[in-house]
Image (cartoon, rainbow, N blue to C red):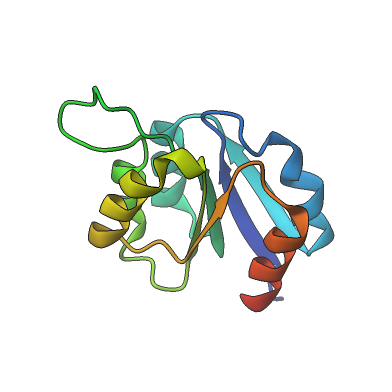
Length: 125
């Protein structure tokens, strides 16, 4: 018996709370986590087809650029898992820094345009 497509939505800053129906319409079974720590714990047990996460730049982080570095580091070995990040266009340079160190397969600006999201996810099917 084959399993369907799975998506882990990491919703720390609420940039994409309303996207679950769109994911499901495209055939994904969705798991939502509201902290990176819980998302990392989920990745230790499951290998989703897609991780969709909010990217947040905070200049006062002491040893990192964003909220996602720990999650991205955990996801790097998962070669079959695609990583989709939602970001504020004002944080483009911070995202570029993170992308220079970690694989991010696609990045969409917020507010997320559903047509762009659907194009990305359909290309990955």
